[in-house]
Amino acid sequence: MTLPIFRRFIILRPFSHPKSGFPIMRLMASTLVLLATVTAAGAATSDPDIRTKIVGNWADTDSCKDGYLIFNADGTFASKGPTGTPPEDDLSGTYTIVNGKLAGQAGAVQMPTISIDFNGEKLIMGDGPDADTLVHCK
Image (cartoon, rainbow, N blue to C red; front, top):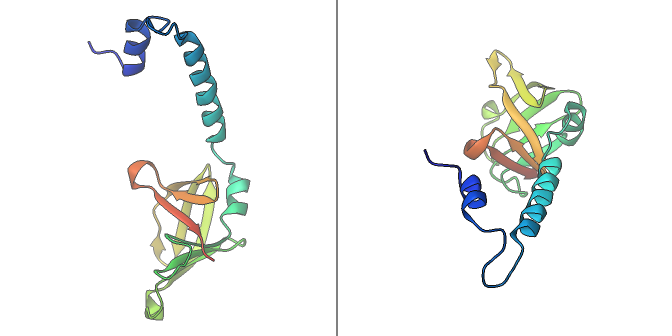
């Protein structure tokens, strides 16, 4: 059985570096404090906070030249294509945010429900490596 890397480190390593006498326990305590801080900072944003922060124009880049999403405070949204895109390619509808998940309806089209959160001023839509990171348009 292979132990997870952090458990192998704790079990196999001495509590101080043999040459420098550097106390590994101090390093481990500092690491735990850092992890607790990062975890608290990364805690899920509440639905009311998301509803407030999501309002505005969002895109892959702050220029929004390649298209953008608009979220309005009244629960409506629009998806606009790049300049020159035919108007029929634009999409508009309504959205809801419940339990940190974004759902939308555009006419007869039901949008997939996805996780939503913020990392600083960036809007994170989805989970893991497939998540989209959007920024406010300028």
